[in-house]
Length: 151
Image 1 (spheres, one colour):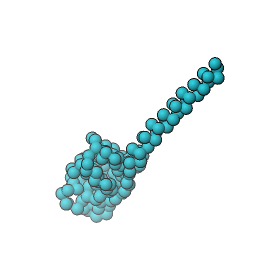
Image 2 (cartoon, helix red, strand yellow):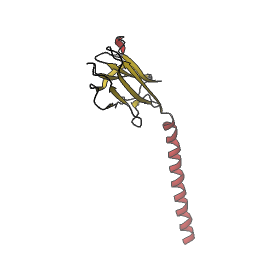
Image 3 (tube, one colour):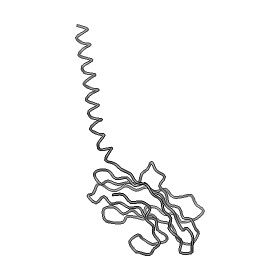
Image 4 (cartoon, one colour):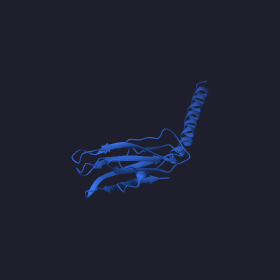
């Protein structure tokens, strides 16, 4: 009798372990479908020299959900007291969002970036831009630089 109970208990444990393993294996492809790209760039000040710099990591999963990589050091930093604040914009789902972060003094610490899309989309092209003053990436002013893009 004891031997039979032991075998049943062992069978239940094995089934639970294998069932959990199947659940974990099913979750793995979704995790593998997430990719991240990283970049950094500087935009020149209209008064000369570096005006602002930014670095960002952008991640996209298989549904088109995108976010700034929180495991990467993503920031914007105003490099010159020239009267032009540094701003970061995100292009996602065919439109610009932002400014998502602003750094307006050359003596402060860098401002960390944080952004996440509201859901998935079929338009997976995503960009992060750094701009000076009130310039925006789509206005063609020349005071913006692409930090990183991801498809």
